[in-house]
Image (cartoon, rainbow, N blue to C red; front, side):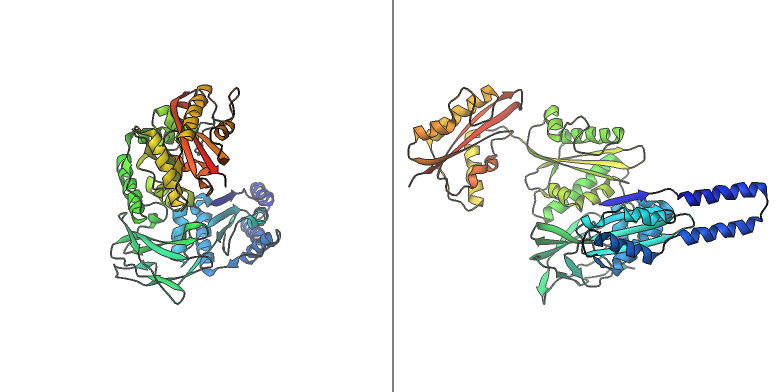
Amino acid sequence: MERRVEAGAPAGDTEARDGARRIEGVGDRPRGRMTSFLVAVLLAAAPTKPAVERTVRDRFEAVGRTAPEQDAALSRAADELAQHALKHGVADAAGLLRVTAALSRQGAWDPNPVVIAIRAGGEQLLGELAKQDLGTEPSTHVGVGFASGTERSTVIILLARRHVELSPFPRAHARPVGPQQLCMKPGAGISSVELFVTRPQGAVDRLPTQRAGGLSCASPDFEQQGRHVVEALATGPRGPEVVALFFVDVGSVNASADEALPEPGTDDAARAALLVRTNALRLQHGSQALQMDTSLQSVAQLWADRLAREGFFSHVAPDGSTLRERLTESGYRFATAGENLGLSTGALAAHFGIEHSPGHRNNLLEPKHRRVGFGLSTRPDGLRVLVELFANPLEEEKDPLGSLYASIADARKRRKLAPLKVSPVLEALAQEHARTALKKDTPKAQIPGVRPLHDRAFEAMEELASVSVDIFVADSARVGSDSKNLVNAANRVVGVGIARGDSERYGDGRYWIVVLYGVPGE
């Protein structure tokens, strides 16, 4: 996440320079004396790093929060990025690749820190900084960077939420080296830590860690020339989460690697490289490798072209159309689908950001996905748009009713709940109601003009103490896990109904599913 502020020079600065031109034109003062005077005014107005650090602390205290611990490595990285932003602009300095490279060089390891970048003149800089609502960011550590120029100064703030502490670890080697011990101290709530290393050519190694004395240690080697990406994945209260990320460079690594990975020369080569990297990551995390799908690629390419052409960047179009609608309009039938969007200097650079964003990473690793398509396009500003489209395509159902029962049974088993007994009576009621719901285009338990399904169930099976109904419309019959009431441990009997047809409101060729549960009386 990043925030960027580019402010123009303050009014006083502009007036002084305009005045210098006017006075110079009249010629009533020596040129050198005027230049010295202007430099003195600019230097007097420029803030200092201690003033910036005080303002950062004040912004946290203003919302009743204690400022995060100031970290030396984060601050060194922020200083490096501030110097870069002063020369090349805050947008260039705040890119994930450049930020990660700076963190790596300076000994930090924080994945995806919040980046707040401000470039402005004189006192305006502190004014812009004072507007930032820093207290909303959940962070444990902060780094503050500052660089001063003759007309403008730059502030970079890095906010990190650390879950592990790392022992010192070299980030560069002149030549290939063997195993190097890396130790991590997990924070509160972290139950396990795994280490992954993405090699320069895209292969991913998963390294076992040994836990002793409160530390989790592994020994990765770096036997290939180029840039290696080291990533620690921890299991905590919110599930798996990347808790450390840094580069290790071996041999001579081009300086441009900070802003762009070595990009393939054509779109087809980029798609092939993206597939290799995606599948390498999936295989190391226990998910099946994906296959390229030309139909998905066509949908992804159309969306990438539209994003580049119209200048927006979202999963939803300005007219409100969604991914589901784009896939349906293309005729692609799917059980599950997901989409990632990336924007950077190239396809692999965009994918790097996707890999280390929690929500996007979930799409990359989703076990249900089987196919993928990549769309690539270039915006007028030269940045590359990447659309990654994942899906599990639908196969023709040979036994939709059996598939539905099987998916409910599997979902109950995964939750360690007792199996349900199939009731022919409830099945007949559910089947009749599914056909009626489709005909009336109303997926509800109570349909106008039709006797309530609950009442009919109680009448047909007087021994039931309670009845619950789930009704939904789906593209596949293998979606019993979507049935909300299956988690009720008291349920003992079930009957399902399924009808397939076209609907003006819900689309054509979809399954209308009714699941009827019963709890017998004592």
